[in-house]
Image 1 (tube, rainbow, N blue to C red):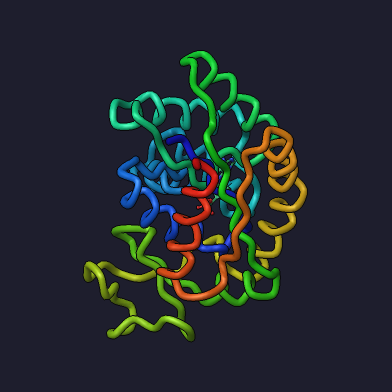
Image 2 (cartoon, protein in one colour; image 1 turned 180 degrees about the vertical axis):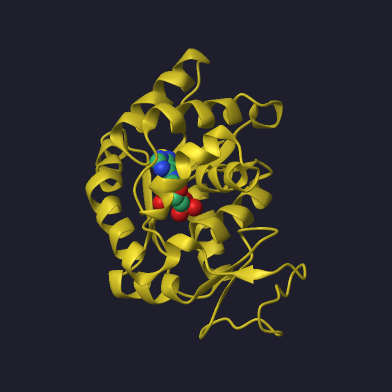
Length: 218
Ligand code: AMP
């Protein structure tokens, strides 16, 4: 199955993508994680991406599309994948369609995670992320780790992402409305979108998502 996950920053895309990918036995491909890995390794691609990410802006399509295609071309993605954070604008959605078409493939479903805007800002400004695995996230109020600054799942160090400050979150939300929301209409016109609420416990949202995807495939 080839699934695209969309939703504003703070909807829980990374967390849900990790569980869904595991349940569906497909790789979780996050362009944000790929950029962060490039930044921590100091690659030229990481250097190109860093300033845009700091500012809450989209990294240019020339850089992003090539990186996403390289990842989708890897052997583990041949049987399907779950895309998290890509495509993020119409040009990327069209590039993805073109890439899949070349392989006689297409997107099977687009899962849209809905969450109210005031909730998004609260979630992100208090979010703490594990350096070992960005799907391990905590919150200073709603999901405190047992020991401050330490990931409950793997013992990794928790940190606040540079782009998780309130000011940058507002910028990222603006970019989401302007650039990313139009892809929901694009995919709706192809009958691919399933929308679910991203409120509630993590496992409840995962179940809701699995049910919605199963209903879509039926
Ligand atoms: P994320 O981890 O998905 O929240 O992404 C963090 C940041 O990485 C975004 O705010 C962008 O600066 C950059 N980024 C991730 N995916 C993309 C994409 N598909 N296109 C452009 N920039 C992206």
